[in-house]
Length: 514
Image 1 (tube, rainbow, N blue to C red):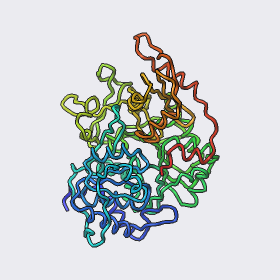
Image 2: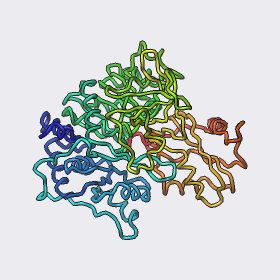
Image 3: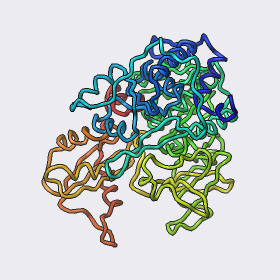
Image 4: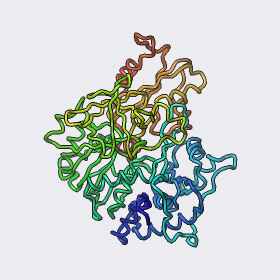
């Protein structure tokens, strides 16, 4: 095997297989699958996929999903994780855009197919055939695409982000040097598999011979008990999880004493949340990690220090840390001129995707500066004296909701197609559980339920607005443009946050996945 072929993402699982062949690689409730058994299942899937170059995995958090993702990688194919509860039209569009030639589906995934392909078309579902099992994973090159994820697009068309084996190799090598994960660790798995942070869970755990323990939504009802009973030592979730656990009474001092590591990403982490979590998990090292999908899961990290970190926060937000080794970054002002202290963050380096699946989507995001291609994050940050960065907010209409990236323009686009609607402006405001979305529209008054039904047909649950407000006209700023800041201010006053039952809170956040 060449040095380049050793950069394959699946090599991390093979490393775990060598360390822990008969220990659990995966636990889902009472079901446990050893490294050896999951390896054999993946080889069967890989052989059964034939020569498919792109493989969709339409499944919830089942053994089929995890073995299917690994099997697609073993086959040397690009894996496209898909959520069976996403709107079927959106999922079909992702499959079409990706060029998937094969599909792995569990029961929930199969149940969605008749609605997705009511015209009789569609990709055949692959059946695992042990007689076709590969003897070993197929070799791949660093430039080959390991997986493809889709982010929100302003025109309603999802944008595909291909991530190469080389990018993941650089990423996980850095993590290996930063963390001390061992075969005795048990990793939470809170993220849906079509969310890039799930790759952190899987391949950090598998690269160290540890166990991935799938976190059910019900765990949030009593997270301390869940962590004790399942032996979870590494926790990773969006910061929204902290406020949910707090409401459930799970942040008492020392309540999460079994944790060694705590990671948060996908949204801004507030200082008071970090303080409360650290008090509940005093033996845990807490890190705030940051990164868009286009930069391979996360690209910066700040290690929380109870003595010094609170004083380094800006506007109550925890620093996102320094950019990973091997990468360059610049801050630029509104005129695209480099600025030393505060501006939009641009990054280039080995974790950066080479562009979107459709090159037309690259405009304004993958840009050339001084002969190199950079990724414009759209995030405004401040550089502290020692080089650490603090996230200040978005520059565009994109926001993070429960960790999902949402283009507000995509919601506008979808609602403008509704009968009687003249125009739409969607804004985001800070709520008790993080960022919440409110829609303002002109035209005829329509029931909110009608808008919600229309959006459920085209948008994932995480993108659905909290409120729909009719206005006769939009407020304008001094430039005679729609005053989004004023609408966001009104939205903050509108939102009333009644206490929800524990079950509603856990199910409604999307934090725990499904």
